[in-house]
Image 1 (cartoon, protein in one colour):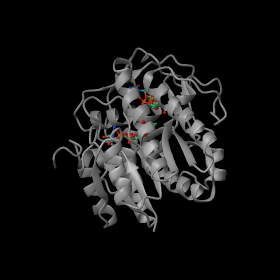
Image 2 (cartoon, helix red, strand yellow; image 1 turned 90 degrees about the vertical axis):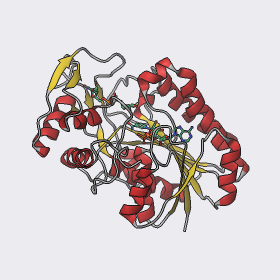
Image 3 (spheres, rainbow, N blue to C red; image 1 turned 120 degrees about the vertical axis):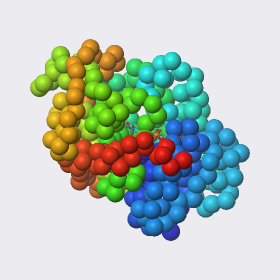
Image 4 (cartoon, protein in one colour; image 1 turned 90 degrees about the horizontal axis):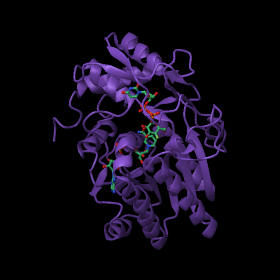
Length: 340
Ligand code: NAD
Ligand code: UFG
């Protein structure tokens, strides 16, 4: 049985990936400093799968703590989710973002090399495409970033490329997520943002549950069918499956490959509001306001490469995404906090 270390293992995408990996027969070790998550997510994972997740509270910037983990467990591969992800905060606190994301990844890779563990799946983002000139976006599209968060993801991609160039025995899969939404079908695990959500879907859910008065729709004058921004929303369980497939791919391939993980289908902000309120039969009041600085009009993936090389395709529909997001929110109006 392979043993997989999930950095940032208590987080949103990692907890769903832990379910998929355990159900596929992997042993999962979760490492997290809990800066943006709660250990309760992992207790819920165990509730879903019937298997405990080994948890280590540690920071990826702490080389000694990482060494201890690699010495204690015979880790075969790392899925590296740990990092900070708030775009707005990254413009205020750039050094913090470079420290957690970039320096943290360098430390992790140093310890991995030392311990001769050279398989890593990295959580990158469609943000590395900046304002893409063409959609759907192909992996070969030029990369650029417009904020420190995006820069940190781009820098890590470049660092991993240099690492593989210097030592081709590394096996690296860079997964560029589009817009992860939804939750596990059980409603036991889901996205639990701190404070006011930055992202559309958790904001809609919090309006629906009565925690926020109304959604602000950022701009209605984009060159899209209804004037609101278009994104490639992907169910988090589909995304989680992408990690399983990437690990299977790395068992057979050396070197580095980047993969878009999206559905290839774009939906507007108003499409999302409509799907959420119609599917769940609940009102989502909204107001159109100015554009949010830094937002692009349209972003969706060409996911052909992942389909072909990873033998992966999405299975969840828009209705599944909004239904599962709502089930999680309804069952856990305060996220994981009511338990801790
Ligand atoms: P999340 O905040 O739920 O998960 C990240 C986890 O990393 C958290 O549990 C946090 O406590 C932990 N962490 C942060 N810094 C750490 C450190 N120094 N040491 C140990 N643990 C640390 O976010 P998520 O949505 O699950 O995202 C996971 C990854 O995917 C991140 O790298 C993020 O940048 C990337 N990503 C997310 C999205 C998205 O929209 N959710 C899109 C593209 C890429
Ligand atoms: N939006 C609103 N109101 C809100 C929040 C969002 O109208 O309260 C709109 C945005 O303007 C955009 C769409 O909803 O058109 C999606 O916005 P999100 O913030 O949910 O997602 P983004 O596409 O802006 O950004 C996300 C992640 C970034 C990542 C990027 C690309 O938050 O970290 O996808 O992967 F870099």
